[in-house]
Length: 458
Image (tube, rainbow, N blue to C red; front, side):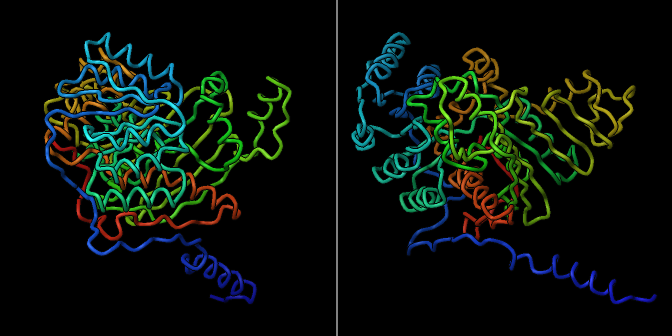
């Protein structure tokens, strides 16, 4: 075959462009562990039969959490804390109406520091604005408390590493309160994936697409819109990341290696603010729509999207693509199977499995019944009764307390918090460097192969 000079140049250019990716990638820093510090993989702590809780942040998420917790046996609410006195008193009123003793009340700028220092508290439940999540979590662990932190758990790489190092040093749990992994469809689909129904999972998708225009004014001091104004990137990634990463066994046999992000220009939120009060939002940072692609060590991919600006239906996407099947949650829940992996106890004689369409609703219902995740078998009805996004919030709280009461590893550890939250700062780096690939640190620092798949302790 004759190779022209032009062809040779093109081949060489192609080889160079595809060559050493590490030379093109933006590196991130991984701090060394201090002497005596060790990883928190499957970390257990002494059982706490009666969990004493303090809540910090009593806005939309925190006040609901107080009410949900009153439906769980073996807990005490010791303290309630918020910036605003009226919120503290309202939550205490709800607590008393549920038959619980009145909790200690704290309010004001730095009142949370008194709460983390209380000697009679086991768990600090943090539901403040995002900017205060990490520093309260770090101090609470230093003060000898386990912590549960609303999403995202941290906003900067420095804060992420501070939470990891503090949890590893103090041997205190640090769990991110990611409720979407406890959605009934996500849990059932995870169980199907682990039983091999979809073959090998190669690709997962997730998102947070939720037009917040009707809700901007509900956030104290307008903090959430202000954060979008000042920061670029996928600043709220965990609802999509959580279910996707669990299905791909991230830091449980695989790890994320690098990401690339792209975004649109910012249009909708600046236009909304101008229409509302005439303010011109100059240099608004966050684009209307951000897309991030991630590649893992085992050759899998994840796509995550963020959009809180444009008028479109709510979706977390949640899709799993496997070698033998496919799962999809939005806009229609469904499974497509091109295999004979369906259990023999399901009557499938009239079903022609093909990847070109979803299985029938009858087969879908049978599959979801058969593969219902074990952790919801005994709690499903109560979860639906108590509520919280259809019950997944209650399952999240129930599992947190159950694991603490029984001295078990938590379902989600500090590395989940790090991996799912890191898209905020790392996507910004990619965007600000013309969508360059950015290294995702191994937050376990070498321990990501200790487990082979996600296990929820029983």
